[in-house]
Picture 1 (cartoon, rainbow, N blue to C red):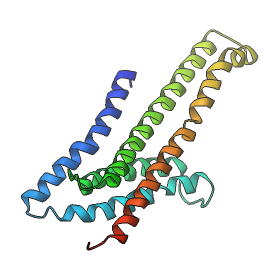
Picture 2 (tube, rainbow, N blue to C red; picture 1 turned 60 degrees about the vertical axis):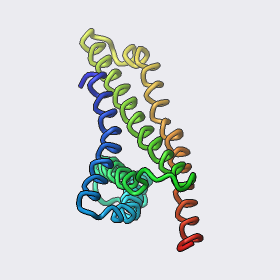
Picture 3 (tube, rainbow, N blue to C red; picture 1 turned 180 degrees about the horizontal axis):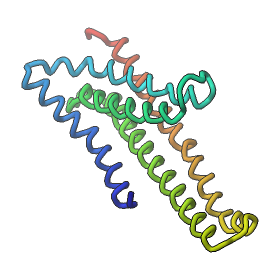
Length: 188
């Protein structure tokens, strides 16, 4: 897949979170059930929490299943959960904290899509370059020397998670503060 096409696909996935939420909210209003959107926050949160099975699997907390499956599951559940939370948030301007949490969530989704794109692209470039150098007849030592900087870039790209994690943590903390404030001020 070309770089432009892959970038557009990731942008489309991000926009689908928002457009899907608008469509789902519209359907709820057509059905006369806009209040159901409130419960989508619970469901969306549950899906995002379930998406962390990928992190647990990656860190060896359990060995069931294949790691790539859990990565795809993480991506799908986080995306769907984010869409449901956007429906939950709606276009209500009754509190700063919920908006900050939703904004942090959208930044987290964008960060995940960007990291996935950059890592996949850098690996594809190195794979192509390796293939080209092998076709030129380079020996293993010369090949590794030529690919050293490229592999260093991939290594740095894999550390992108160190950026994604604090963004995700910020979202999690804001979401917890939102839930706590709702629990404290319930029925006021």
